[in-house]
Length: 141
Image (cartoon, rainbow, N blue to C red; front, side, top):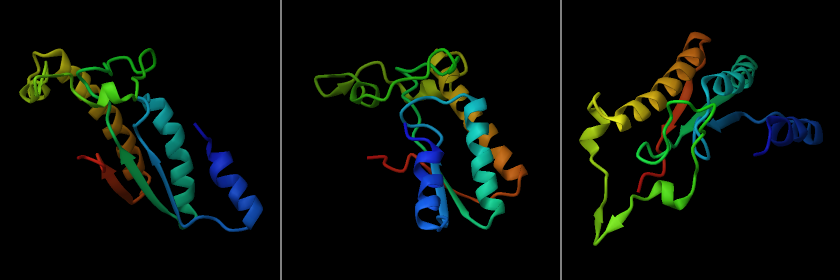
């Protein structure tokens, strides 16, 4: 993963120009911890305070495959198999969408943990007065 320095600071050094829009993913290749998102938020807050615009994408990990209960120990895995349900004769196996909202299921807890981390990170930006162009699950297809 490329760092902010590699992507933005070096661009500013080479061109003398600061990008108007700065964005990042709160999740795609892995499940980030709240601490990791808070560290990234400081860059976004600084950019906002300097007059820039902020965009945040979020592509959550599949809660049936990647358990988010301890993202510091299990950060998930972005592979085609984790994005696509196991299919048996055209039917998704083990995917019951109602389980996402049933507190008695493990997948509900995994899903809520992802939501709670992202909500806390977004709340930090809100409390700092940052307007966010929020793009969750932007490639849902």
